[in-house]
Image 1 (tube, rainbow, N blue to C red):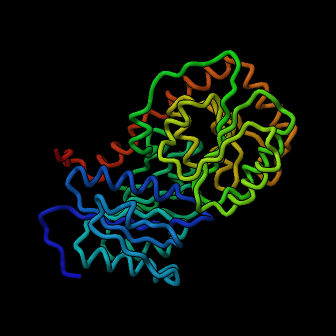
Image 2 (image 1 turned 45 degrees about the vertical axis):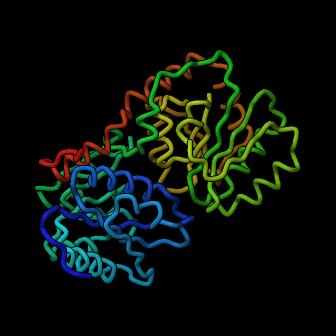
Length: 355
């Protein structure tokens, strides 16, 4: 690769996306990259992935999309990232994966790189220039205790939630029916770990719901879900794979049941009352926080899920329009859809959208 010219700023986005960890990292980085590109920044992606067609997803605005060798781990990963940034004259980086240990960060720091780091674990010392946690559970005191440089900017809470354009453009007031009937089940774009099946099992014998299941072809549970639906034709349910109108499906729904990741910010912004079932350990704090502030109902993590409790919560919420109206209002207060613009402004405060 030839050295880049300096006519525009360049940023490198280093992320991981697999069926196991889901596509939330990809969705937020792709959205942030597109907004930065609209501000005149040249965006390059370094990605560890499995079978996702990332080049096609990012090609509209990415300068380059490099699939990294998954054998590069720890300091070797960081060294490759720093060297790539140096080679193309990138002046910023975005780090969005679970392997950014203190040793990893020190490689970037020693290379003179400035970077924004997504963090949801609050478990390792933080050396980045910007640290982002959009979780409502983000605790400023805990983050500041891990801050190792005075100039680090802590960008915490749902006001920094990154949502795709389709959600910002779809945001509208919601009609709250007296009895909720349209139920959306969605657990992200990767492996739902059996969550859809667990919900369907819990809903056996419950009448009156029209169920829409949103998932992707990367979910290894798809065949099992299809088989279950074929064996239970009495249940009014539809399975949609890779649906291009997710926001519209959320607008059409009365209640969502979802995991504790990125989707909770989408349902909050669209005012969709939500029941949260964490399917990963790192989703539990977010689920509890949404429940504590009244935006969602936090039920048991998937491995501890009690079908009777889920059924009771769902039936009760469906019959309680006042509670659903309150959840919708709070969700839209906490998530306004402008998080991506706030982060773009943090990274490049003097940039403006290119017409």
